[in-house]
Length: 179
Image (cartoon, rainbow, N blue to C red; front, side):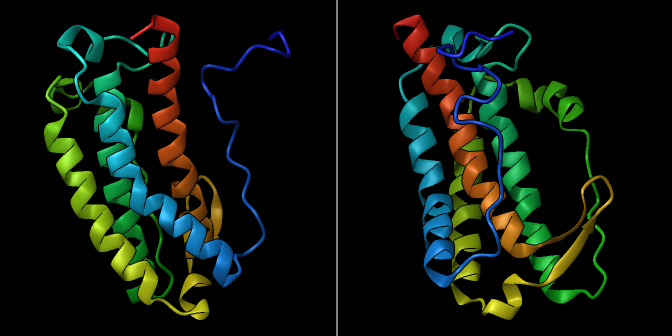
């Protein structure tokens, strides 16, 4: 049992809890979070040594570098899922094993600059797309084999949370480690 005053290192900002479908104002806030995520993350890993990038954010967790590289993988997939849901009827998400992806050589690489560049580019394009969409577009469905039917609106909420979630893994580690 976790001490109520102790943070859950797996979910430092809490588990994802989707809100009802977004209002334009709520949606604009989520999109702004997606827009800011790459630079927020970059600011928290800037200046870290290779030893720090190779440090797991918790026992049994990914290293800081794996977290950054995972974010590039995951957010690329989310951007593409948005595009497919907008352009295909009955779009079914192709899931991937993120734990296995995190063990591949490029995900274990300590040079996180390429992943930060990917995030900047993907988020710039994704935000441009999201800001052009109508309410009906945000309601466009997709089916995730493990989660069931979801709408783009839900995906936007998830990825607004996802960027903050993984950045918090790194900031909590830095705080605990005195970096």
